[in-house]
Length: 325
Image (cartoon, rainbow, N blue to C red; front, side):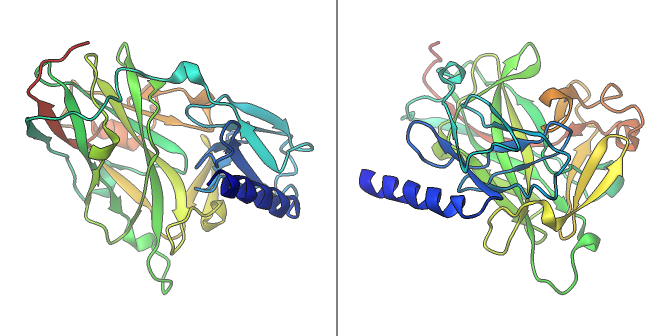
């Protein structure tokens, strides 16, 4: 098996060297691809590597870009001049980001199930239209001071079907789920876990049930933030496509990338006045999380309606044994 990995690595190195505009991000230690790494151009724009760690960077298209910043949760960020990008980009694991209390050995024994219902609707005027790379995070508490596993995430996602490309079949958008520590009420350090990525098309149920029981993610005493991030457009095989399938619109907040095939709408609610939803743009504002209120965008019509919370739901498993921390 080790021989096959190194043969594959050598093959990819030779293949990529023949295409000056294609690059691959890999783990420096095991030489495996770093799936969906973030490629930031440093000016509010960027892209994501695919599942195989490969991304395109046509230099003639981005003649005004002089540097790239490559990052991924669990790895140290790397920066490169666009004149000197290696075909194979290696990222070193960031051991300091490991979280010990969240991911635990599989629990055994009795547990009870509790569902926290999601909130959904079809009103476009009280829904958030995320751009490519946008991320929205919702806070969840641990229950009954007992080990509480997140078995499912219940994700309200609607399609603005009138923007679907005519006569070209079904299309989808790829999303990523990530978790963060609670840092005094804000999403804090990322929690290292097996990647959770899925594709959703315009025909999927309005509340997407994502089963993550096998990931063994337990909510710590101080709670946890779960986030939904838009990675981009998916082809008919479910693979991430570079941003070509999006039309770029210049706004006061920078370049907005809108899918020409499927625009995911996240229905927001006004039913949780004490709860806060946080959002951020990966390529803007130094990746800073901001609460979704006037401080984020005082001109937002959605914020003015009072619909400021993303109604993500969960299915939780509460184990009988007491929590030992």
